[in-house]
Length: 115
Image (cartoon, rainbow, N blue to C red; front, side, top):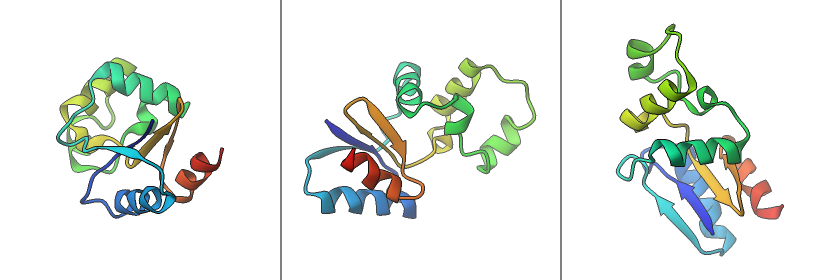
């Protein structure tokens, strides 16, 4: 099933959602700021993305800079930070058939839909 982890206040996330709507495919929307993924779900997303946990973090967010930047964090600690502060999760994330992409730039979503 096609799914987007979406933040309606983010321009790139809205662009990603528009791409999915234009595709005509059925999809689910996860408003991840309200439906916060747990560590297990984040680990699965990271595996599907083929990245390290830190690569899913929005390191320019104020909460990251004030609470976590410069600290020696384990992968689990990074996951816990994203669970506690979902604003830190990069967006949008689109998942299809066990693969995932971060829709920055939004064209990455189009490529996922084609593959």
